[in-house]
Image (cartoon, rainbow, N blue to C red; front, side, top):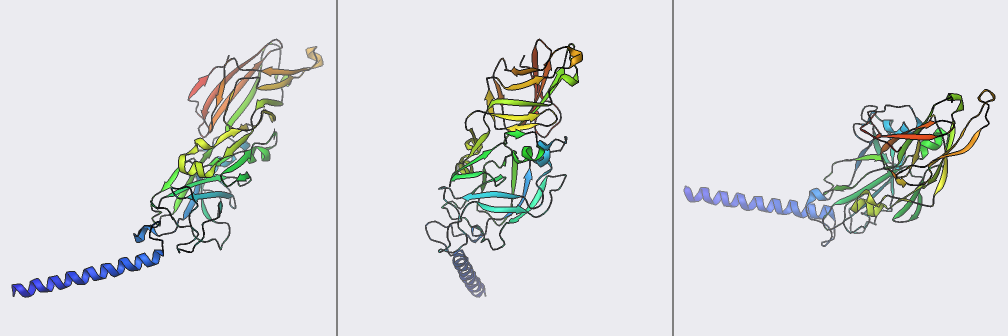
Length: 345
């Protein structure tokens, strides 16, 4: 009896091997992939799917300024550009067949609902309903992903886009349109069939300027509009470089220019270091003050002021007829509490 039991086990084992071999072969056929560039594990041949976009996880909307509009997430129908590459910087495939073409990037996705107010998260779907699923096609089968909003950035080349802040940020719509949001480095191993969230953060610096009357001046003497001078307004976005190397390749560019802003709203500019005259404004005169408007009053920081992305700079300009002093407080964009103060003067 012992030999018979041994023989049955052997037959059963061989049958199992045959089943596994057939399953592996079917999986390989299902991938329909080239032997050099595609892995043979069936769980690596699943499409790259995106479930949602979120703005700064744990963010809380604490203000009502136009610059904070996206803190609560993106509205229904908002469109974002999505770029997916393999480890060689080539676009992934639009399909899982050998003959499938490389994806034409960017893939445009849109939000299907208004963002959840608690999580600032919105569901995503391809803008075009007939968009073919993207599949990984590199040797390591990783997907290198980058996305940004809004899609209004100007395409210069396959790996260069330019986004510009508005030069007139007295209008709420112009401020909102000046808010660039983007992901950082996202590497999705094997795709794995799991839908991917695209977490985005603000790529602009947000600045609030308040004018504080001192001495004989009053609020009526303070400017309601002012100029932000000697600042760059453009950002160069390199999707492929960012996807494979990180957000250091999202850089400030362009010549220095002037942006008009007002004291009731924040304004947005790309990250940069301010060393020259920064603000220009007019102190309003009144008959009762016995002086005319004092025009072209400027503020120049006594030391360089470095403005970083996703930070808020609250600048209080204390104004007297004879002098102007400034104090700046810096805080993360999505938090009301000030983490530290930086005194310019």
